[in-house]
Image (tube, rainbow over the protein chains, first blue to last red):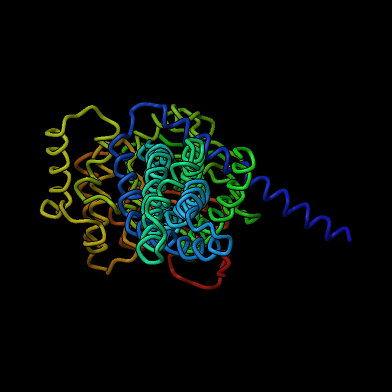
Length: 256
Length: 248
């Protein structure tokens, strides 16, 4: 019995230490952002990596999410003779919830995993040690620009996801199933308020932080062995997904 | 002058260094030999504080680098150049940019001066026409040469070499050794090398130290070391399985 309690205590302590190290890593990354010289060129490079490189998958998933919403929304609303509310339902679902969460999932899979693998490889092949040995702080050089880039790129990708999703639902609802185009957009205009847009974008900013933080932390601290990179990549993706969903619940409950 | 005093280091309960004492003489090449897993690279990584010990001191020009803050430690680190085992070139940069990297990050030099200095170092290591290539596009020997060019580009006082010939065929290994000897003659740095490329490495080492069982078993000028009567040294140099060193 004592053994079991001791094991539970050891696991809990190890997790708490891990969380503490993770938070310190994030604080250190933010602290380095404000220390000169600024790494603007690197920030732009990583905005390109996160933003442009994830664009195709975000557009594709946004389009099909919107189309599914159009189909499901139409058949659900038809039961109540409320097809004219399709535009409103689709827009609210995308802007408040699905846009930020699904685009964050796409970016985690496309860019976050690559980020963890790249930093993990740098750890395993001593490139991070090489930076230390050249008196260059690797957190400032490798992590801080990625986190800033994530904060900037994520809301832009979410906005694109939302627009494409709304158009996808329009194609299905209006062009295919015959909902009136006027009621589709009028319903949207009447029910969507600024807070819906704002809360979604705020979520996406925080998801950008979660993705870059978790993926950089896992990659940066990859175990220096053959399986270290794959382990770091898997853990970063799983942890990002879980944290996005958990944080989404808390943000939604605060902002509703 | 680097002085290692009573250095202890363990990893997850496995005691690797058990009280290492070693003086590295200025301007000379000191080679640390020892069996695989004996802690040579661990000791080397302590010399510029890439690893920190549980106990002990490392004095670089009188400053104990195990107790320095980030800023002071970075000033000390700028005295060092390091050639890592796999060269550790940044794989998202060309070889030219890798060599230029410390100059761009740590000096105020203009791009023209940087270009001149990098070209000179690349020429010295025989890679003047390879600067545009990425590390993944060149051979292991070329990576080591590029790593050496990067290690030397800041004109360091001390250069650490972590098994510079590992993974290379004997001819390439010999050419890297000759290159290191030539660079040492040109720049006069203090060199600390970890190697088990015996006896090749004795040809240009001024002093040799042997690490086994977590401590320095013997250290002496090369000519004296190779005729040492120390049982551990004799066992290692003769490749005998029986003796004071336990073969795992």
